[in-house]
Length: 411
Image 1 (cartoon, rainbow, N blue to C red):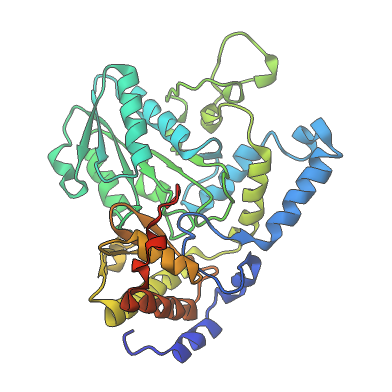
Image 2: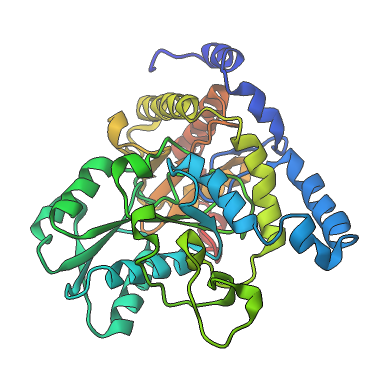
C-alpha cells in the first residue's frame, strides 16, 4: 500500500464492483465525505420517495394509508429487511423508536428472563448512552447493580450473578471490533444473556446474529444504512425469547389487539410486543428508500472494500504524517470495523481545518479524529486525496489558527 499512486487508486475505482452505487447518493462537489459512520449520505431516491409518501400516501390516501400503503405493518416489514443486514431470520427484528429506547427495552427484557441474578455488565468504554441506559434500567429495578468492565477482562467479572452483558460490536472511538460469536458463547457459558449494540456494524460489515446465538441486539439506521437524520432504530429479539420476555413500555402498538381498545394490556405474540407507539412514518420512509439500495448489496463485497480502503488510509497516513498522529484503530482485519481513528494532541482543531477544506470526518473527545469509510460511495482516490489534505493541514500547522479551536455544539 505504501507504494500506491493516485493513478493506481483511480484504476482501483474503475474496476470496483461497488462503484455503480456511488451514483445512487447525493455527494456535494468538492467534498470527500468520511463521516458516514455518524450520518450517512443522502440517497438520490430518498427525496422523491418522501415526496410521494407526503403528497400521495398522506395527501391523497389520508388515514386509509394505514391499511392501503402498509403504514401499520411498516415496523415489521422494514424490520425483516434490516434483519437481512444483521443475519436475522424473519420475525426477529422490528424498526421502531431510538437506539436508547430499544436498549432500555432489550435490557429490561433480558433481566426479566434471568430472575435472581442481580448484576449487569458493560464495557466502561462503551458509547455513553448505552451506559446511561444501563444505569437507569439497573436503578429503576432497585435490584440490579452495574459492573463497568474493561472489554478484554470480561472473564474476570462473569459469574453466576450476572444476568446480562451489553457491548457495542464495533467501538465508536477506536473502531475495534469484538468477536461476536466468541463473546456470546463466553457470556452464555456463564448463564447470562448477550445484548449487542450494532450501530457501527449494520451496513458496514456482515453480521450473523442468528448464527452467533445472540439474544438481543439494537442499532440505528442513520449511519452506514443511510436512512437519514432521525431515522428509526431497530431491535432484534431471538425467537426463543420473544414470548417469555417482558418489556416495560407497554404501549398500544405492542398490544395483542391494538384496535380492540381494551383497558388492560395484553402483549402481542412474537416480536410485535417490542413495539410501543405510533411509528414515525416519514422517518420510516427515508429508511425505506435507502433499503431499496441495500436489498441489492452484497455485504461480503462491502466488507472486502472496507478493509481495502482502511488499509490504504492507514498506510498512507503512517507514510506521510506518522510523526504527527498515531493510528489507534487495529491493523488486524478480524478486529477492525469500517473506520480509522487517529490520535492527535488537539484533534478537534485539525478536524475543523480538514472540514473547511472539504474533507469531512469528526472528532471524539479527548483527542481522536475519526474517519468513516462507507464503501458504497467512498473510493480509493477519495482516500488518496483526503490524506493529501490531511498532510497539508498537519505539516503546515494551519490548524493552530485560533478560529479552528472554537468548539461547536456537535463535534
